[in-house]
Structure formats: structure tokens, C-alpha cells
Length: 204
Image 1 (cartoon, rainbow, N blue to C red):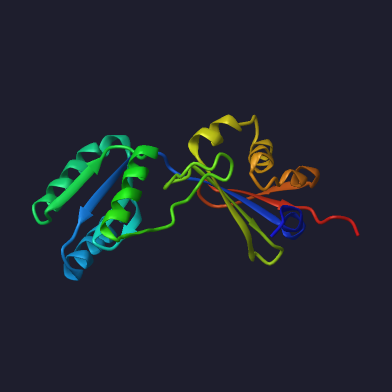
Image 2: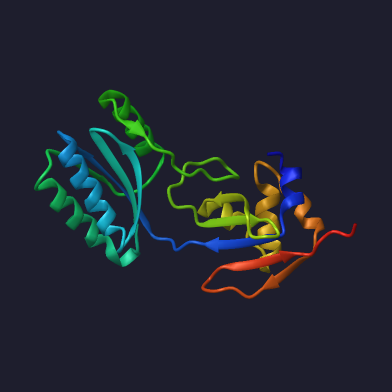
């Protein structure tokens, strides 16, 4: 959908900042479907305590995780538990282009399938845990678009107030939503750390 047509449908903007932390990637090679289920269930269980994003499926399973700075020890505990049961377990203590390229090659070698990973809608960088997500919705709350921005782009487009911040991000977006800057945004109450704006309807 063209950005100009999308803008016409937008009646609400919600900025959803995400907690930051340290990223890591786990790679686990399994020998059969039972082991695959075990590993997937294991990471599903720990998602109650840290952020988890599956990145591949098949004989090679991979998961991006994000932990708070004080929880680094948890990564070693997870690796030790996995290594005690499965033959190949690797832990890469960051998420970057290098590990993503390695994962891509390993998936090709093992016949495993890469899963979709979010990309920053400004710079295009693959980012499993975007720092800022901006959701655009219609008058009845129907989702129109969801745009994701990495920590670098979020910082580059910081502003003195939330309205200018979201307009700066959307204007820098690869689809260019700068026309929203011409609309009147009205801040509305919301829960938690989310920031919500209603867009005043255009005059007929």
C-alpha cells in the first residue's frame, strides 16, 4: 500500500518503546523431531523471563535473546543446560551482521529454514528486538501499518517532544510518512510507557 494512501487511513498513532538490553544468539543442532520439540519448548518456557525470537527451524534451531545487563549469567546457565543434552550448542554474545550471515550459511548447509526477522524501516538493518515500534491505526482501531526502528535510528531521530519524535521517525521511514506532519496530533492518555496520539480529522 502506498504511503500516501496509508496516511489517509490513519486516525491513531501509538509509539511503543521496547526495553533495551544485551543481545545474544543460541544455535542448537538437533538429531530428530523429539529433540527439536524439546528445544523449542525450552525457549518458549524461558520467554517468560527474557525476550526470545526464533530465527530458524529444522535440524538447526536458532534463537535471538535479549537480557537485562545484570542477567548475563543467565546466558551461561542456558548454554550449559543445552550443552548437557545436545551435541552442538553455540552461544554468540551479540547480534550483528556476522552472526546473521553465519546463520544463513549454516541453514543452507543443513537444509534448515531461516525465519523472518524484523528489519529497521529506516536503515534496513536486521534487528530482532527493535527499540521503537510505531503502530498506525484507523478510526475504529483497525491496524493500518506497523513500523519498526532500531536503537541507532531511534537515537538519531530523537526530539524535544514526543510529537516531533514520532514525526521525525515516520518522515525518515523508507516509505515516507512525512504527510502526517501536516495533520494535527492530539496526545491521549494510555497505559504503561506507550505514547498515543489521535489525529484530528481533515476538513471535508
